[in-house]
Length: 234
Image: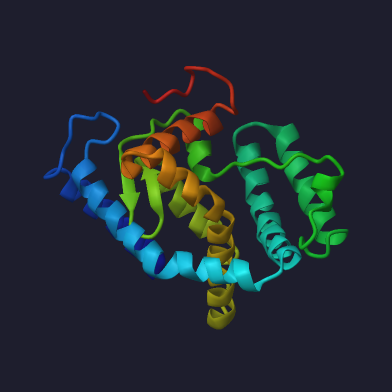
């Protein structure tokens, strides 16, 4: 396990340890005191560094170029979305995902154009955290990780697997790897800019708003949008 995974593991252990001294009455969020502190740290970092860069990127880079960059990273993600669908036993969806990769990598020029969506090939959203949930693993406590933000204990385990399998994060050429990681981060953050105003206006307590939205969204994703108690963590 390299240094990146050791840091993530240490962050999870720190959350669990400090959480024992900062408990709350919320069964979904038993370490709320620690989580709020980490949330404030992440918010501060976003305000002074990440969001301004994303806003500059949005202002300086033409929309077609931003779309192409997002498509490129989305095409890479489709490989592992397909793997997770197969691991969950959803073979037709997995074949669909691998088909998207084949079409977009070839006709879409290495994924910069999302030809598959134009052809009606559906894009899915799967990760190793969802796979663990489909296998019956409970979500565990809600936890806010430094930099990575909202997770559950289960999704943190899934995140470690996601990072281990991520081809971008495992490129041996350090300058190329770091450039791609930073570009992906900025691209992802720029796509979330429209949601900032909605959250700021709707949330009386931004921490609770994001926590509840995250937990609800994860349940929906694990259940593929179907109302069911088969994988309900409540």
